[in-house]
Image (cartoon, rainbow, N blue to C red; front, side, top):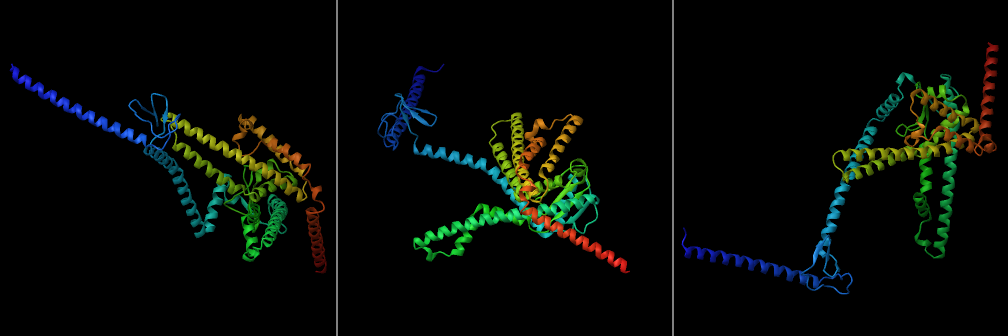
Length: 454
């Protein structure tokens, strides 16, 4: 019921407002177009397919991904601001993914420092705690343990098995220290020769006045990897060793990085596998080889590295829900498989050095290798009893298959045997044995003479 003049006024006002809005929109659009044209004409990047910088009118250009594409098909490089944004996003994402392994490593270092502090405060209590955990793994208690120090086997007349371990272990340790000492001297001599050649070169160039020969030699020795390796091996072998016999149903022999200078052997190892000194020498040589080659500390570093890689991959896991659990299981399986494969390589290296130590200690290495054939037969028997075939999943085991190790050791025994060292280490050991037998005969004669006099 509104009058016609009133409706006309309202329509005029609406049209006027619409025209002003449209005009302001056009002005803003023209300003943006002018700014873009100015930016691209002064762009330092050339156009793909063209030679200069700048592209002219861009009314029909489109933004595709991180590149400008014109109607002619030419590609325009991104602007400086866009490039900074891309690199900043990559940097932020990298920091986001790297912080989780970094935090995990920081937590590990805090635990490591706490362990060092605890050991420094109470070393005996700390070692006693670790020893208790080892006994728990062997399903034994402290009443099942017998121990003797190296060198006391001559005066020890207690447990027969422990006496055998101490006797054979003493021979293996003696030749092991000789091997490490020889390799250390050989590596040091090589570095000394290199230092002499370097000093001769400096003398020819008349630069020797500014160089201290002793400082140069010590610096080269400290930087040489092999010298450091054999020096650390010597440090690990030095000290008073102990042989620990554990009355357990679990057949095993091992050394521990956390309890150094100790060789652990269980009574079940004698009951199932070891029947002579030759077999015992190969087993102990294998364990001492782990100490020489630093497999304990190397294995811990390798496991820590695999854990960090696993955490890093889990931090960038793109899956969600149940897929995330599957990805975590896959990563855990991969870490375990890689760790066990690395452990098998270490075991093979310890076999090679262990049979060498047994041969240098004048033991029959071909006879000694049969201990691994017994282990293979034991595995076959366990498979028949339990129905679990361990050989099918050998890649998930920390040790290679016993039959493969037996065959490899038989081949190595052709070269590494006591006949090879008859004129070197065997001769010295034989002389020591003769001296010991002569001492025993003198002691027996003296005791009989004293009894007759009384």
